[in-house]
Length: 108
Image (cartoon, rainbow, N blue to C red; front, side, top):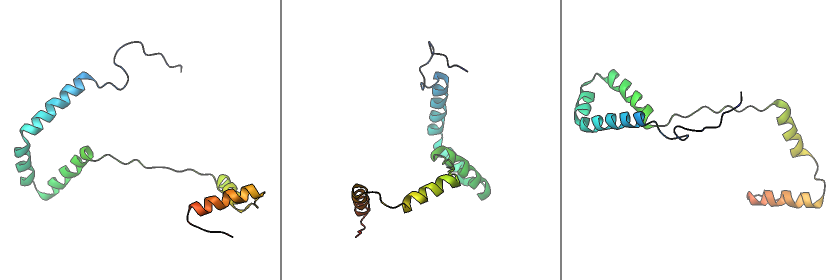
């Protein structure tokens, strides 16, 4: 499907005005009632306190995404073969020696 050229409306990435206003209202409410919220939180049963605490963590800490690495066996075998191929010329040998030295190792 072809993408259309955006010709009007909000610029991409501009927050929705209603969303921004709603967030401001919620933030103001929370700031005005923080002491009551703290008292109510302390009066909860431990299991309920933990449940709410965990839910609030979602807003305070960014969620980490799982990273999936896919490397085919063939690609990995090719990388290993390249490591063990004989050095073709003196220039290549010098380049490899510099890389090894850069990492704090020596070679003869």
